[in-house]
Length: 156
Image 1 (cartoon, rainbow, N blue to C red):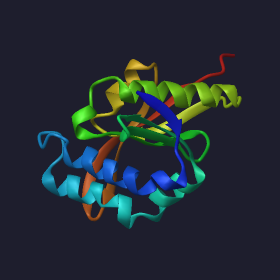
Image 2 (image 1 turned 60 degrees about the vertical axis):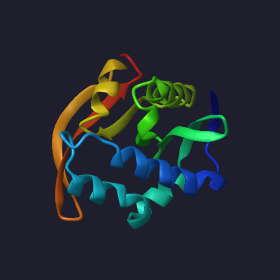
Image 3 (image 1 turned 135 degrees about the vertical axis):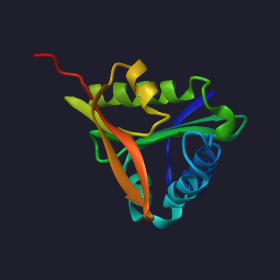
Image 4 (image 1 turned 45 degrees about the horizontal axis):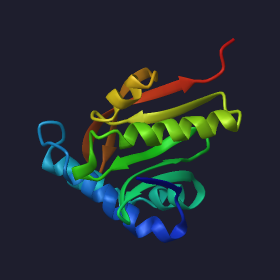
């Protein structure tokens, strides 16, 4: 397993991984329609490209194949955290989350925030994140639920 910083050359591979990650989600959690709308964001949402261009991210590859990635953008927000469908639940998300947290602490950030899906919020909870609230958003006229979450690094 190799952890490396995301570069411009990785973007197409990351879009494909993002798509694979979402399409492989169990339909008891997200419907086909939800998965289709969500997965399309790699190509239809300019913020996706902006996050990859301007954000600070890391990827994990094995045997020259990218299997997971995560990115912070803006600086105090985890905006992307995805694993290939066949690589989920193997600790890669935890490794990436911990790397992003260490980098944020090193940079002196007081906290990180995110909006976690119904499947990823448990990963954040296991890593001592707090739920601020559950919220609903609309992507392509389809309603999604997610969790606004935060992890504070400064203790007063």
